Length: 443
Image 1 (cartoon, rainbow, N blue to C red):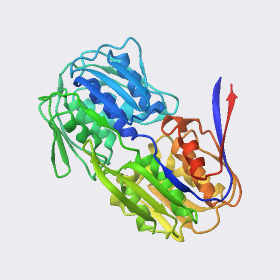
Image 2: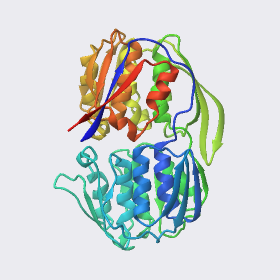
Image 3: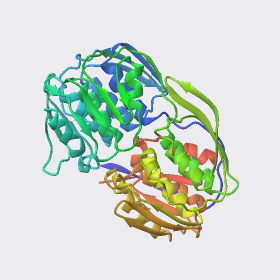
Image 4: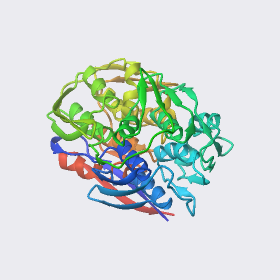
């Protein structure tokens, strides 16, 4: 028996007040991975205590790493060194976390032991060839299903991987990070060339642990001649989680919200840039640096938005925020067009089609394209029932749409919100969203 969660959002209202959203998911994953193979004890604060990051934490416990916590966002990792991981006694189950699976694929390819990576139904349907293909070129031995999906059965190569010079066909931080982690166990140099900038948390955190990484324009290189030394990591609030309230406060008349301690890494701020191009009033205040990552408070007040053609160079910098940006586009006057975002079709769901279908269900003029969407906005969003298809970002995006709806919106299959943003309902209702969450058991 499993539990399903349904969101019901009352129409209208505004968001007002201050909030601090949970820690950055990308950095929480990487803090566990790198802290585990560092020498010494790493202390993490601001760790995201949601299911995806906890899946990574459990995987490293299963490989012999002593990890204390999390407790109030604090984790203590007793690193075993770069070559200290032990053979897990069972398959490593990674739940819904694509980041865990893709990055661990690289980290484990060069180990002296074999591993099997599994996940839930959603993760088991997501493509893994984008990482397994270049890893195979390095000499990795990874078996997948015939369609290139999980489970991944990895035969450890014990330092026999060969460095490669890989030009990524599509901008992807997960692919880049996977290959850099594999490069730590490969002979010679491993280089990854990006077609466009993607989030650089892996490179920044490797540097923070004292591991040498070089960057030459859009080419990042690493080799096996380094070690990681334990350090302290303060994880800032996740801008992908903040994005729901950036959009909500932008579209709901009378809104005035301040989001505290948000990570504003320049490879992650596409959502701010896109909303500002649409006319949103977002002030970045109290800028500072914490553990090598830029952090600030964000102040948002409601302003009318205008439709735009979203610049393609901003797409990789906002790839996870597009579900809620589609809601902003539905509320903006005129046409918004997104191109160059075909990666959205292979996330937890086909986010292009699922968002287009849901928006149309609510009366929005939205048309999906192979690599994006065209939305003619400015009209009233209606009420109705939409299916999130188990995708946490879809569920939260439609919850925010309720601020501009004319009737209640019911959102089905929302349990996976707990994988990334367990506190969403509490923060949203505290700021003023009329959201009710109902659990029910299904056989």
